[in-house]
Image (cartoon, rainbow, N blue to C red):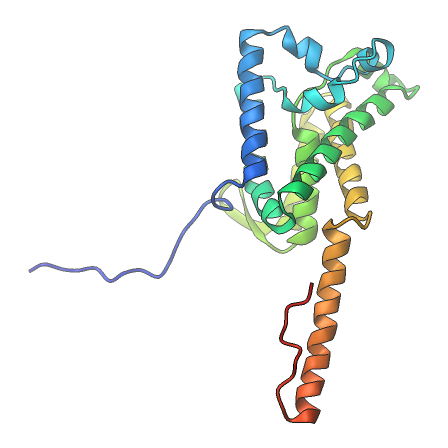
Length: 243
């Protein structure tokens, strides 16, 4: 006897779904840059952000180009995986243009923070002045911050096993990065990405500030709509979308 299985209503998925335009462009740019550094290793010395080179040799492109440089397959793999997992949903929320601006601000801000920290008169920062920094981690930490601010209670699988809220996931990732990274170079870049990202979102040009205003206005109008419906006994004209 032939048996027919009933269609299941459960759907399982990993990650945020199809890649969005800006995330796709960034990933391809990073992959192309990685292949170029494999073929021409000297590009790392030229395109990594080295505070002494930026200040003394005026290599002002380095705070931008370093974001696309990676050292090793594992380095680029985890950074691009994180960009896809958390960046796609933010780009859908913000739009491509704002997402690209935010990514650039956090990445360049991480480089600026690294340069400034290298100038501090402390023993722990003395070696940073002539050491190169590469990778998209600074921008990625800015994205993690934004994701935790917008979706604080979104469950994320830690180690693909334990679901935890996004706000705690970001704290754990930050702590792991702090204790696993040698010296203060990566710490400064990660901190810079978080600080610049937070300040940019609080700047009032879209992002978190605009989203809060939108939510408040929508809540207020919904309250007015309910009162209007109750006392008038008719249909209200508040069913339009709030922009």
